[in-house]
Image 1 (cartoon, rainbow, N blue to C red):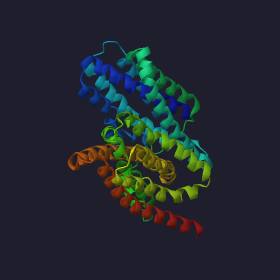
Image 2 (image 1 turned 135 degrees about the horizontal axis):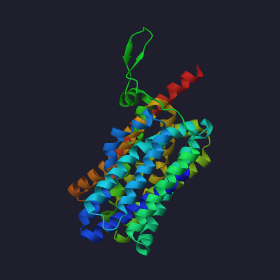
Image 3 (image 1 turned 45 degrees about the vertical axis):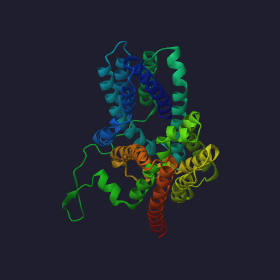
Image 4 (image 1 turned 45 degrees about the horizontal axis):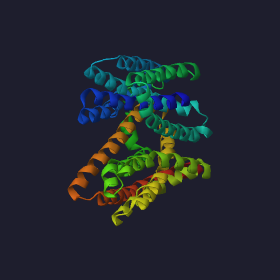
Length: 394
């Protein structure tokens, strides 16, 4: 699954650039190009809650294999020369929607596929590998598409889905469905049936799940600098630095995760650091109120990005706490909420910056508001963890 996930991410990054270049070459429209690029992210907001339940209802290996073959077929159709643009957009939306049950099944399988003592390390490896593969795919895409063609790049992406389907089929153990009948009710101690909780109710009624989701949704504030990277670089007098600013977030996340898991080996200690690191991921943004130069901008974003490594142990904690029967649906809900938070944060940040007329004050404000919310979420996470530790001790 790790190899499949890494290869598929690199292929998707390559295909994203190829499709954008193909659309622009046909339409010469920046608006159409941006709209198609957005189509690689927006379908998740719908398909996450709608389709992730498949990862609980049916055997997860089967869900991953079927989804990978369907994506391979759809991307192959996209790679046909002179395919009408409207058809390509429809196919792209379908590919992205099918990704939701695949990713839900993959995420839900990890706690079962990995030994408990290696689960946190496995989550860290998955997350860091995806970041590296995404950076590598985006960085090399321009050269590959120029040397070959957009259709060839899409064909390469289709081949990665075939590889994913084969690897998952031959290497992942078949396990029965976690919740095959999607039981609507269960029998209580009194002998009467009571409604079974749905995934959303479970998340909000479980303090550890609720607080860790709240911490992860703070990513919306942390993404404001990325959304303002281009105008920020212009304001700094270094338009060329927009790419550097955008690259800092994934690059520092990879380094931060490596340092965190290298220096802190105990899972419980990393859990205790989730809250403080979440706060630290936003506090440096307040420094933008001083209107920093490029060097200080990079320094502040680097500190914030390194602290953003808290998302990895938070993701692992989510997987450990979530009951197996709910993991697929819960992943769909959480991934949708996270994407909405990130996209919403960038969009709102742009609107506020337009109204204020200041990029740096907007980023500083996002850091201040986010830090206050992070302190509250961190406090809730700490209380929930302490209660669990006390129960275990007793």
